Image (cartoon, rainbow over the protein chains, first blue to last red):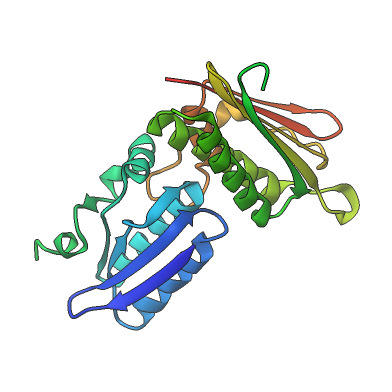
Length: 110
Length: 138
């Protein structure tokens, strides 16, 4: 998995590319922790290039969500593929990890 | 193949890199098998990833020796199937008790997810462990 991180005025974007499984989850967690420590607790995880996710990837996203909210931010998903959306739905995590059509739309309500 | 199935077998040391190899092999198997629904591909990959990760994360041999695992995966007209065999020390796993944890839990979903994604999931303990995964094609 490749991981790209960019920061913008109102939020930061983390873009995992490839499979988000146990071998990749620690790097995602570390990237989100670093963003929060650096004062960027509003995080969009852009899943547009994420082919597949399993429970390890979901666990990393939940960890990021909790850490972001503790720092008075939030974690939102964008551009999840049909495959990733089906895993979120299967686990009922689509209720807490909300997907948005685009990165820009994720914090577009504020 | 004569029975119309496509099959892949891999053997390796039980470490996270093996899970990636299994998922790569499964991807190739999907390509070779031809038409398969996205749901079948996604949910079977999910179950395979969960069980393989469980094996490489929790399996231990007596005396700390490396655990060796063999994955045998096949696709035919009826189903997607996988069998994992390892030589880890025997441990009883209460599959029937596996259920999804609280939605904000960061771990503990793997076996429950695998059960939900499959029509059959079994685990037998003998000198090692044998996992059998079957998802009927939709």
